[in-house]
Length: 146
Image 1 (cartoon, helix red, strand yellow):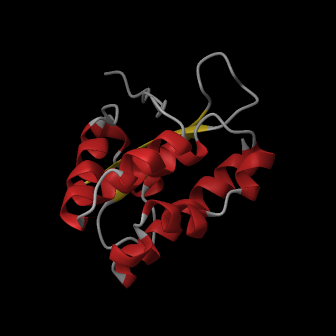
Image 2 (cartoon, rainbow, N blue to C red):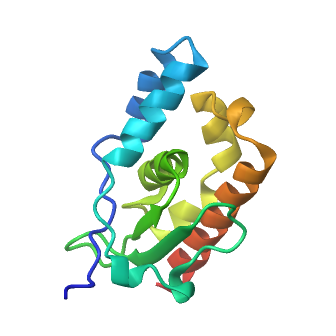
């Protein structure tokens, strides 16, 4: 069995993502768009859904492994999955923010500001927010090590 995950390679940049979110006036529409983003994540091999790859601090199950974009060993990427559709959407947003960046650039990304820009900061529950920042911390620690 192939347990090599496909790294998240965003189809758009953060500016385009913010423009897309700005098109929606209602939270329900943003929520649906976020879920759609999560549905487009590359498949994550079941055999990598292990305790070692689990992100601690998330209420949902989240698994994450680090890597690099194809042909770009100096840049960071990751593969991830969750058992919750909204969390998959959050993973997709984090992929847009972090995948393809250098470790130095990753250290400068302000996730709070990014989520304010998207209008998501007001709509994520405190427990979901804790999980989000657990994922961010894992990404930042992976980026420094890899």
